[in-house]
Length: 169
Length: 107
Image (cartoon, rainbow over all chains, first blue to last red; front, side, top):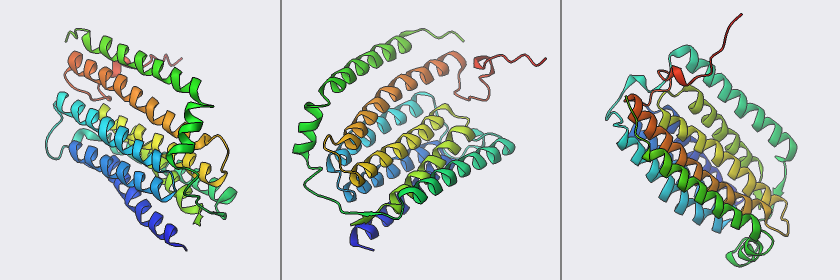
C-alpha cells in the first residue's frame, strides 16, 4: 500500500458513502447536497490518479453548474422541505431496485477486478498535466471538440423551447 | 504506484448506487441524481484506464471531459422537461405520470 493507495481508499469510501446517501436520503435537498459531496470527493480521487485537469473540470462543471441546476429544479418544483415519505417507490419496487443495483455493482466489480484488478501502475505526474492534455485535445481531438459545441447549442435551444411552452393543467 | 482494484471497485459501487436511485426514486429530480452517479462511475473508469494504459492521445481523459460536457447538456434539457412536467401536472411524481408510459396491451 503506497500513500496514493491510502489516500484513494479514504476518498473512495467518502465518495461511496455520499453516493449511497444521495440515493437513499429521505430529504430532497439533503440528497442533492450529498451529491455535491460525492462529486467533490470524486474530484479528489481524480487528483490522486494524477488527472488534475479532469478534477478541475469536475469541480467547475459538475459541482459548480450541474448541482446548481439540480438545486434550482428542486426549488422550482416546490420540493418538500423536511422528511417526506413519498420520495421512494413502494417496498416491492425498492427491493427489486436494490437487487438490480447490487447485481450491477457485483457483476461490474468482480469482472473488472478479476480482469485487471491485480495490477499496480505508476502515476506519471507530468503526463496528465495541462500542456500535453491541451495539445492532444486541441490537436487530435479538435473536430469532436467543435462538434461538442454544436451539441451544447442544440441543448440550449431545446431547453429554451421546452421551457417556453405553456403548460396547461 | 497505485493499485487498480480500489478505483475499479469504487466505480462498481457508484454504478450500483446510481441504478438503485434510478429504479427506486419517484421524484424526477432524484432520478436525475442517480443518472449523474452512473455517469460519474463511467468517468472514473475512463480516467483509471487512461492512467493504466497511458496512450499517446490521452483518450481516457479527453473522453472524460467530453462525457462531463454531454452530461451538462443532458441535465439542462432534462431539467427543462421536468419543469414542463411540473407546470402541466403540479408535481414531478413519476409513479403518477402514468399517461406518459407506453401502453401495453396484454393479450
